[in-house]
Length: 128
Image 1 (tube, rainbow, N blue to C red):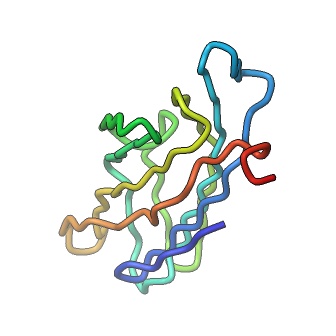
Image 2: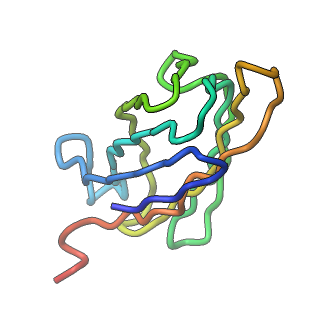
C-alpha cells in the first residue's frame, strides 16, 4: 500500500494480482488496484480527469487518459472519501503505475492536479 497527500487530497493505492484473468504462459499479467481518495482539505472537490502512466519491465510504456474514474466524477465534501477498484494488464510479471487526477475546487472553480503515488505491480511468485 502506498499513500501520498497533495494539496489536502490523500490518495492511497493497494494492488492485487488477479490470478483468474492472468495467463503467464501468454505473458498476460492482470492486476487489480484499489484507490482511496480522502478529502482532507476544507473545501469540496470534484474529480474531473485521470492520467495514468503504465510501465512494464520490458520498458514498455503506455498512457491512459480520460474523464473521471470508473465512469464517475465524484464530488467529495471536506472529510469525505471515495473508493474504487480498477485493473490493468501488462506483459511482464513486474511493472509500475503512476499518475495524476485533475480536480476542481467546487468553491472557487479553480482546477488543480493531484499526484497519484507510484505503485508497483508484482506477481506474488516473483517475490519468492
